[in-house]
Length: 279
Image 1 (tube, one colour):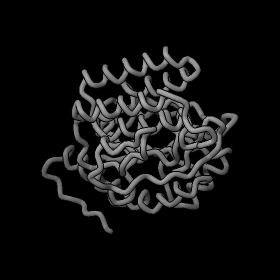
Image 2 (image 1 turned 180 degrees about the vertical axis):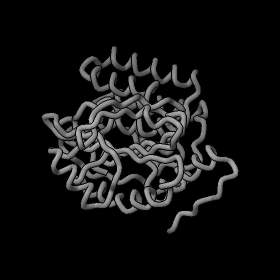
Image 3 (image 1 turned 90 degrees about the vertical axis):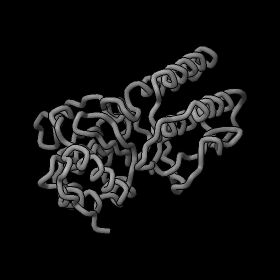
Image 4 (image 1 turned 120 degrees about the vertical axis):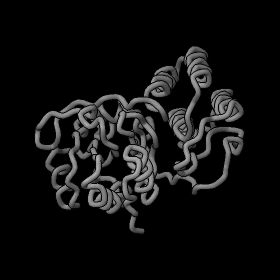
């Protein structure tokens, strides 16, 4: 995953391999990389929320190691959000997290803008929330909305041809489009290439015939309005939505992405034949 820092430096990070690791495995200084997203998304326990908040407190308790980009407050806040997106918060747990972020913003005004960005994402971009609507033109200039696809399982991918890891995901995207072409399924993209021509050419050459919004026209191509609204720091970022537009999975990849779509389609169409993923 390509990740941007506050200095718009792109760092290369690898998500930890799937394991039984719990939030208790966090370091004493800051957040570890989140585990690979699971297909059995679970409600958070109060103890896990305690550990999330405790780790966040430790991050801001003292100065972070100077010169270490991985200890940057913005990156630590992004990792915190990724941990939050691995499970489902109960309303009381969500209120605790939001309240703590509000306090941190008051205690550390120099980071208030960074903290507010994550605080705003908690009630909008976590598991179980209706995904924020997106409205804009596709790569051919035709206006469309994310909400137009209610009634379908949607894979919403933030990607770009500039990103090698994004391109590595293209084969599984082609497989999804082929496997579920007759199902209530849609793949939609938010493209961060620097020009429309590059975006169009990249998708055409990759055999990916899905609609995309173009979001690459900011001073930095990774800071367009859609990716900013969706709090995207790493490319690719993927949201999987159920037919009601509810976020059910964040950043599942490869065969796990295929299985996530299958799981939601099976729930949407009880009794329908199972479409097996080819591995």
